[in-house]
Length: 234
Image (cartoon, rainbow, N blue to C red; front, side):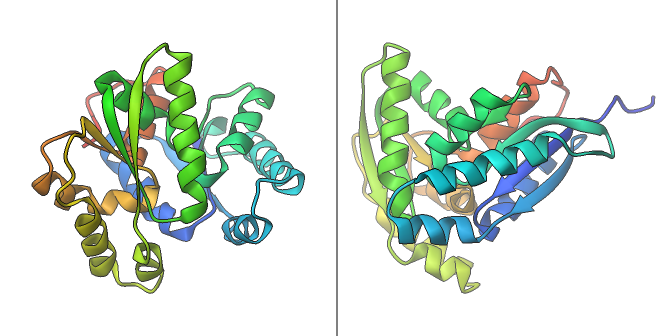
């Protein structure tokens, strides 16, 4: 039997540490998709320097989204866009309103699953500018769906620096240490693509669902494009 038509999917990154987790999630959950990557590592640096998501950064996201949507080649035109940079939710939401194809924020699918669980939702991040923005996004999604939740923000200092230095083991150890002993949670969301590598270790010490953003996003994007097959995200 010949394979069905491929979907061309753009993956847009602000951290190079997000690329491998995104690719791994597609390999698990949607191996038939044809993915290509756009990376601008200055986005995270410029956000930290600016201290806010200013007009210049917003315009850069519009330019990235427009470029990705207009790319054509293997598998035809781009059918969907997945941003993997968690600290830029409002900019990505603005791109969503401008493009006719599905555009996913990195966290919205994982947040949606967490809201289905309800109660107290833990939110782990290693990039400080992302914490408040993601917490606000989760609370706004809960309000829009008429649900009442509580959030438990968890910032893990030093973990991202360790990962950038090539020390994945220390990254995972710091994340697990920060989450060990947590009580009263009903779900835990790993708020950055780069954090998904710590999920197996966290599932060993926690009894609540541990949701990773790349796997949830791939599942949601595949469903949006109507291509549900036998492969399912881990």
